[in-house]
Image 1 (cartoon, helix red, strand yellow):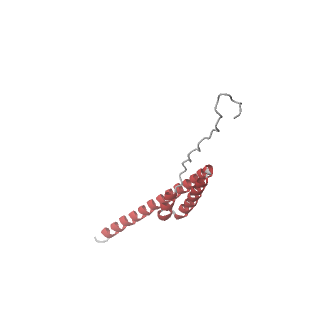
Image 2 (cartoon, rainbow, N blue to C red):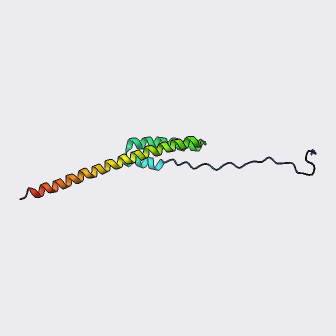
Image 3 (tube, helix red, strand yellow):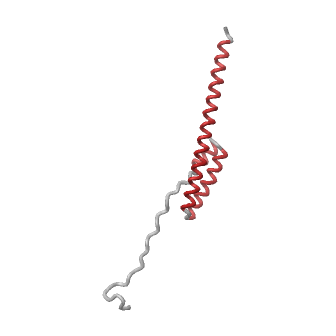
Length: 110
């Protein structure tokens, strides 16, 4: 034992525990549901970005995973809005056709 620090114990190296992994959402479920039920082209793009975000998160690239997750969310939001507008137009169109069909049937019987 050397006498560099007389009367003291030798210093142990300080090991900082690893930081907990950052939470990066991957939007995988949203992408799959949108691809199946809403806007398929943008759902596929959102799914690709979600898979890339999940892969980068698992490999430790938190910054890259965050960027890909935000891209996935952007495309999924656009696809959800487009799907909602198309569904609304569909309902309006068939609602108008239903009303016109009823009015056409009632005016022809007199």
